[in-house]
Length: 256
Length: 275
Length: 90
Image (cartoon, rainbow over all chains, first blue to last red):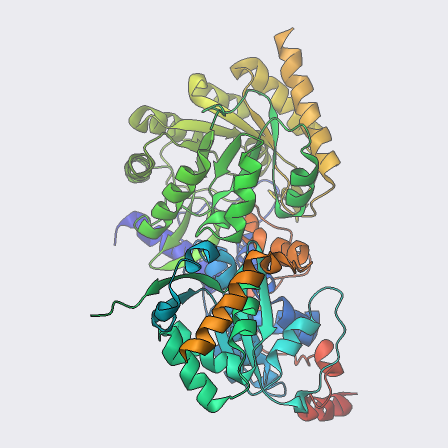
C-alpha cells in the first residue's frame, strides 16, 4: 500500500469506524476543532446512507415510523458499509438484515416488504424494453400459436403475507385497511414507461406467467395452467399483462 | 441534436427531482440545466425524464461518484455507465469533483479531500486521462470545499488544478462558493487561487449557499447565495471573465421561481461585466 | 389447445390494437418518481441532515430501544408481540 492510499484508508476508517485520522491531517483550524470537521464527515456519511435507505424503503419507513426507522438504519449502516459510489445500490441486504434484527421481529412481514421495495427500485432503473408488437403478432399464422415464446419484463414475488395490499395501502392517497390474517399474496412488479406498479396476481395467472418467464412455449404454459386452474382466462391475462408493460416481445420456437 | 456542444455563457440551474415535472410541463426560460450523473445510470425511468429535458435545454452532466483521487482503481462499470449516459444525452459539458470517495473497497458517498502532493497529482492526472479517453472528450474538474487540510500537501489546490489542466487538457469548473468556504475554514488565499489557475481553462462557475455548524462552513447547498459569495463572484468575473454560471441547491429545495431568481442575479452580474 | 389459443390471441389482438392497452395510467408517478429520482443528489453536498445520521461515534451503541410506531399499528392482526410490548412500555 502506498503512503497515499494508506492515508486515505485511515481517513475512511475514521469516518466509517470512528478510529483516529492520519497524523498528516492538520489539527488546528481558525474557527473549529478537527473533531468538529471529522464529525461533519461522519455525519454526512451516515446521513447520505440514511437518505438512500429512505428513498429505497418508503413503505417500511411508514410502517415503522421515523424514530424506529432511524434506529434501524443506524444499525444497518453499521453492519453494511457502502461499497458503491451510486447510492441507488445501497440497501440491497435490507431484507436479510430485517430477518435478523431483533427489534423488528414483532413485524414478521417486514422482510418481504423489503424484498418488494428493492425489486421496485431495480424495476425503476431497468433498461427500457420494447413495446409489444401486436401488429407483428397478428402476422403469425394460427397453427404457430402454440410455438410462441413470449418475452416479459416483470418480477413475481410470493409472500405468506398480504404483501401487495400492504404496498398499495402505503401509496399516496390510499387507506390502510389490511388484515394480516387475510393470508398470502403473489405480487407482480412491472414498469410502464416511468411508473413502477405492484399488482396482485391470481394463482392461475402466476402459474402461467412463471412458466412463460422460464420460456415455456405458449402452448405448454397454457396447457399446464389449464390443467391446474380450469378457469384460467388466457385472453384476459394477456390483456392485463400488456397494459402493465409486462409483455415486451415474442419469437417462435424453432421447430425442426 | 441541434443543441450547442458547449454551454451557453449564461446562468443556469441545477435541476433536481422536485422540479422535473414543473420544468417539463411549463418549459420555463432556463439558460441550461445541470444534473447529477449517477441518478441516471442504468437508464430506465430516470433517463426518460432527462431525455425529455434534453429536448428543450442544454444539459451539463455533473458527476458525484467517480472519485478522481480515490485509492481504488476507477470503477469500470461506473465509467461505462457514464459513457452510455453521455452518448444518450450528448451533454454540453461534463464535470467531476477534485476529490476521492473510495479506498480498499469501502465507499463514502461524499466528496472527500486529499493531500496535494506530487504523488497524488500523478495519480489524479492519470485517472483524468483514463476518463477522458473513455468518454472521448475533455472533462471539467471542480475545486472542492473542505473542512480539513493536510500538513503534507506540497502545493495549493489552485496549483494542483493548474498542473492538472497542463498535463491532461482538462478544464476547470470553478465553484466560487467552495473557494469561499475554504477561505473561511482553512484560511485559503482566494486571490492566490484565482491567480494560480489558468483562466482560459475555466469553463463554468458554480454558486450556492452554505450553512455553519460549530464554526465550520458546511457546503450544504440549502440557502441562497450569500452577499460575501456574490462579492467574490464579482471579483472572479473581473479577473477571469464571464462563464456559464450555475445556481446549485440540493437540500431544502425551494420553488423553481426562487432558483430562477437566483440565476437572474448571477446573469445581471455577468451582464454588468460587459458594460 | 390450438383453438383455445387462437380464440384468446384473436381477442387479445382485437382489444389490444383497439387501444385497451393504453387504459390505466396510475397517478403514482409524482411521488414514486421523485423519491427515486434524486438519491445521488445528496452525494454532492454536505447535507444538513436535520433528521438523519446525527449519531456520533459515542452514541452508536444500542443504548435505547425504539418500538415501531408507524402504520404497522393500523394493520389488523399485524403484530401481537408489538402490541404487548407497547402496553408494557407505556
